[in-house]
Image 1 (spheres, rainbow, N blue to C red):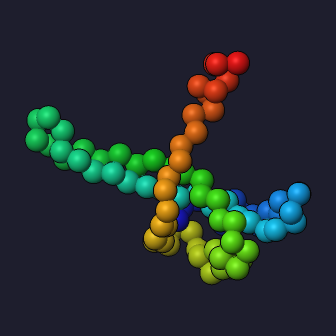
Image 2 (cartoon, helix red, strand yellow):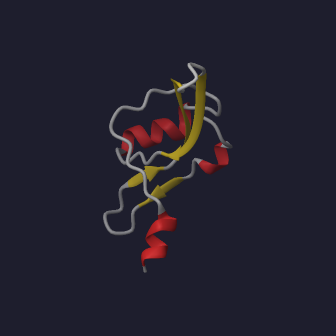
Length: 86
């Protein structure tokens, strides 16, 4: 995980009162292009951790630069496209 630890603030949902955290994570993809050369792309994502015990663990135990395994599906939102449609 990358980014400063100060960005890993614990947050609390207003409606339910449950705690969660939102660390920044870099994901990397590699593939061969049409010229048979390896290409790599790094994207930064904000991962929302809603399980209270796991969120607390991320806040206290995971440090900047640590490698982590994130299971689940990635959902990307393009907020600029949503603003253009309004």
